[in-house]
Each structure stands twice: as structure tokens, then as C-alpha cells.
Image 1 (tube, one colour):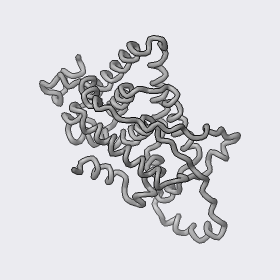
Image 2 (cartoon, one colour):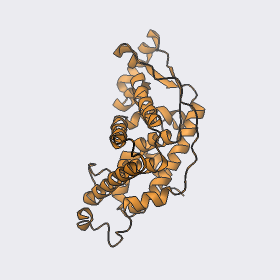
Image 3 (tube, rainbow, N blue to C red):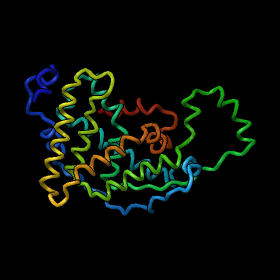
Image 4 (cartoon, rainbow, N blue to C red):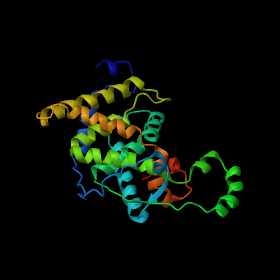
Length: 263
């Protein structure tokens, strides 16, 4: 394949294609936690409701579950041979960019559902007392005031879409490969190689779908529609919702690096 000829990262290890790597990694079938999805996604009549701030109803349980999914996700990434062959700089770029969508994909695969509750609006006195602190705070701190109902709706819509498609373990593996190997990120050295890996993931998924779901010729397109929904989910929202209740002000990127390179 032409993608691999011009990249020094591949060397002579052509056999470590994305198809080989992901299938080899995913042969250890994960047991799904089959929980029934929660209440149906509620539609808001106006945009005002979607801007309301919400938080997890049971943060202790949900955050613990999300953390376990993140550990499995990073383990999946580290066990892909062609990922390990990439330069360390490229590995960091890919992990920083893909951890959140991969986590939400993992939550869909493990059938992790969650409920939220509306956070109370601060009183006028609280707003007056904290206004000076907000002006002195950084822009990030000022934004870091919870997630909106619209953010939750985006995540819930993606989870519901995946559960409705009844995605198989192998399909999830190919989707993870397509998300992980994103050649459009800035700072990558082995762009052509990574582009080739993503193309192989797409091709492998397409061939698998055609073989297993012959009665549904549009399934490949449906899976890509789900991926497009995944791209709209903001990583800061994922960190705020599922990890801030546990790690507080700890930098999420530092935590990721510690988890990824820690023993």
C-alpha cells in the first residue's frame, strides 16, 4: 500500500496492519455490562433549557465506572502494535486528541448509562460576592462552571445511537482504530502512515459489515453517522462531567500521561 512506502516509522514490519493489530488486541473479548438505558432523551422546547447547568446524579458511582472504562481504553491503545511503533511525540498527539471520544465509545460498548440533575442557580448575593473572583480568574476557570444540558444531550444521543445499532465487539474495535489514528492532527510526524492505518480501519470495518450484515447494506453509513456525532463531543465536557468530581483541579492531561505511561 502506498501509504506505508514513504514513512520511515513502519520499517519492515508490514504485517502489523490495523486489521491485524486491532483483531489481535481484541481477541480477548470484553464482557459487556448489560444495563438497560435510562429514561428516553428529553427534547427541550427552546434553547434556554439546553443552557442549564447539570451535574451527575450519582457521581461516586458514575465517575468510578468512567475511570474503569478509561483504564481499559488506554490499555487497548497501548496494546495495538502499530501504535507502539510510532514516535513518542506522535503517540502523545494521538492520545491527547482521542482519549475523550474513545472513552465515550467505551462507555457505549460497556452500556454505561448515567443520570444528571440540574445544578441550582447561585443567588444574587453569591453572584455579587464571587464576581470579583471570576474577573481575576483565568478564562478556563471562568468557563469551568459545569456542563450544560445540551452537552449531556449530545453524549446521550451518541450512546442511544450506538445501543440502537447493537454494535458488535469487532465493530467497536474498528471504530476505535478509526478514531485513534487521525491523520489530520497538527504536529504529527508520520502523517502518511497514520492515514494508512485509519484507511485500513475503515476498510476492515466495511468488509466486516458487508460479511456479517448482508441484510443491512446501509449499516456502514449508519456507523459513520454515529462517528460524526462522536466528534461533536467536547473533551473538556467529558473531563468536567466524569472526572472533575474525583480529581478536582488536577490537570486532566497530566492524569492521562500518568495513567498511560505508569506501570
